[in-house]
Image 1 (cartoon, helix red, strand yellow):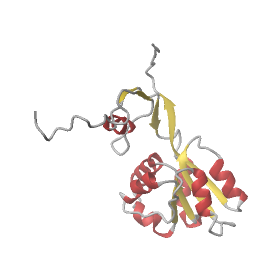
Image 2 (cartoon, rainbow, N blue to C red):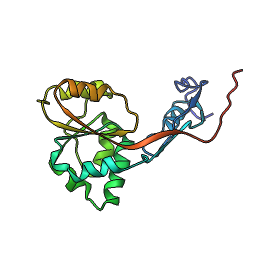
Image 3 (cartoon, rainbow, N blue to C red):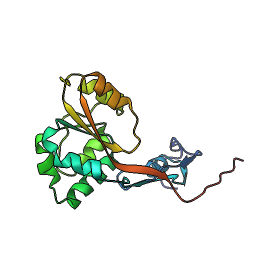
Length: 190
């Protein structure tokens, strides 16, 4: 037996636990991989899929009137991915487009996705939810500022309501939507 092997090492923290992951893992963010690296057993069954919005009309109109936007707010990596894909489809350079607009991201993962496109966010709150973003933005004068919320078709209303209450004008343009997968899963507890 090799002396380098520690017979008294403790098992990984999630050893012996089994997790059902119902979201779609991506190369940038894999909950399944994170759980496995901590010793957990993972069953993956994506219950939803992320797809483009039914219409790009509101997005395209907002892009055409970009001079009227003070802040762009990204609430997820999906929002960044679909927004930038659409801008490229419209033959618009995202770096140039966002160069005169202040940007806020809901968290570090969203900010990192934006940074991969060569764009830095002015605000990234420590608390990675809308509430943290609201707190960070409250340090600014929001009266009559136009906030472009680049998010899912059916987002939480917390952010838009709080910004409106602070006098901001809100532009909502869905850039993706979530739908149930076509697969049907049945789970049995034993």
